[in-house]
Structures are given as C-alpha cells and as structure tokens.
Length: 125
Ligand code: SF4
Image (cartoon, rainbow, N blue to C red; front, side, top):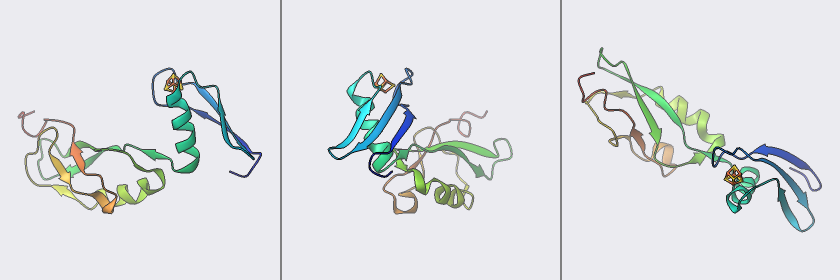
C-alpha cells in the first residue's frame, strides 16, 4: 500500500463486520468505519502483517474417519497459509487423537501447533 492510497476492508473480529477504510497518510495509517478499537488494531495488522487462524482437515489412517478437523492454535501469517496447507498434505494422523491434542508441533517453525478440533476418532463416531 503506497502513501495516499486507501483500502476498504471488512473487519472480521466480530460478527458486526464493520466496513473499514484504511488510508496511508503522512501521519501514518488512518482507519475509519470501525465501531470499536479492535477494528483499528485489525485494520493496522491487515495492512502491515495480516494473519489468520487456519482451519482445515488432515488425513488419517482410520477408514471410519479418513480426515480429521484441525486448526492452528493461534494465527499465522496469511502469506504462509499456502505453504502450511502443502505441509499438511504430507502428514497423516496415525493415533486416535481427541479435541485439543497436538497433531503437529510448531508447524513450519511459525510458532503455532496444529490442534485437533473433533473427538471423532475417540468417540467411535
Ligand atoms: S470494528 Fe469492532 S464492532 Fe466493528 S467488526 Fe470490528 S470488532 Fe466488531
């Protein structure tokens, strides 16, 4: 984003989905359209270092549940999501893990574990 540029974003911090306008000025970023301070933090982060929690599935060896829902414990850089997805395509869950279990530690050295978000492997489906 160059100086004097403006970008319109939807804040995804809460269900209100405020439409934010982020402008780069000589004084720094100017954010309008937010209904609360969290929108300012989101707008700034989205322009300087956007991050997301990745929610997806990974393969298992269990025929009754061939894929298991997982997510990163916290947010990872948005520009790393493709690389993380490629990595996750290489792993297979071989143990019956339940909610909160770590399926992969410190994924790609990004400081976030991949955790299981379903008990489908331990509940007997
Ligand atoms: S600016 Fe505040 S109220 Fe609006 S969507 Fe973001 S968190 Fe919700």
